[in-house]
Length: 120
Image (cartoon, rainbow, N blue to C red; front, side, top):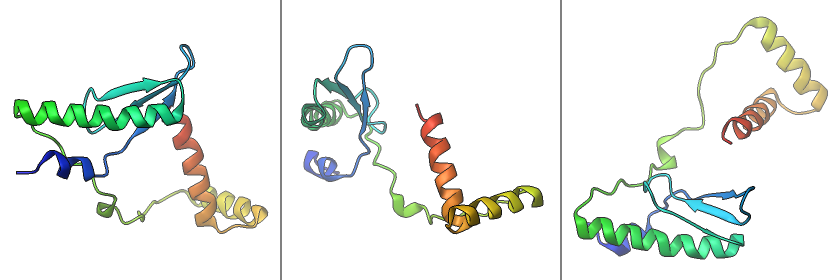
């Protein structure tokens, strides 16, 4: 059985979001449901997040709640195969050439930009 220290060392993903309405920053751990805190500054929010994570884990261990381990990035290769229409392939090749980058870099840029928009 894992201890509190074991769980504290695990790389749980921390999300920091600026609170546009109230001001300050809200921090949560998506793999630890309900583990959330806030502060006026990013530094304060991160410090509070460590305390919130510890308190959440202590309570879960005390109550015998199953604690999910964070998903490891090691499970992902960074590669996937994608079939696209030839016309789109042509456009992507032309745009990446015009930008002076590989088509792979250009597609990563486009995916990252769109993912950031849809993640909000």
